[in-house]
Image (cartoon, rainbow, N blue to C red):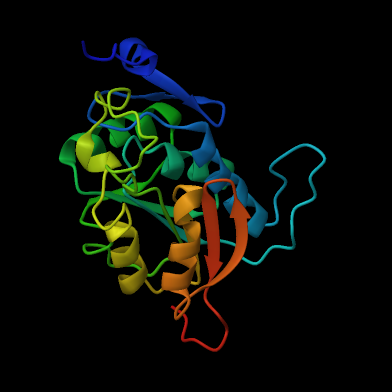
Length: 221
């Protein structure tokens, strides 16, 4: 017996950072842990992201260029644009169906974003200040994995080879932004930090989220 259709797909929408986003089985259902990406960016921008939490001093330019790689429903890119209107936001996905959903969500929320069909950053012509990515990172062989519960979501958006790290490593190898923000399971964090060490230094961990900065002695964008 297959798992029931998730509530978000039945309803056709899912809340993310206080906004409703259209979702279909062509895109992943946005998760609460991913909202930490938005908090991390607002912190870098010197803006409050929680009541009573004082942000760090602003380190981003006044009009930062931000790229969301593997945008899916567009929830990350759109939320960034709504919370940080001065940012120039780009978003990529390899799936045309996913980008159509993301474009509908951007129109719904009045968020002008440049959407690009691309494998990772391959077709991106600009150099961003920050790259954010919630890429496929699930390892099919995890003992605790409930594949049945995930069976309605797109396989290509969930699973990756090399213990779930294939695309994350490829992204690290090919990017050259000052900041890199990644989502991955905490059990993968040590390996990701070790792999990125030649290009990036870890400056913060937020649950599933890793925030990296390019060291000053390396050439920036």
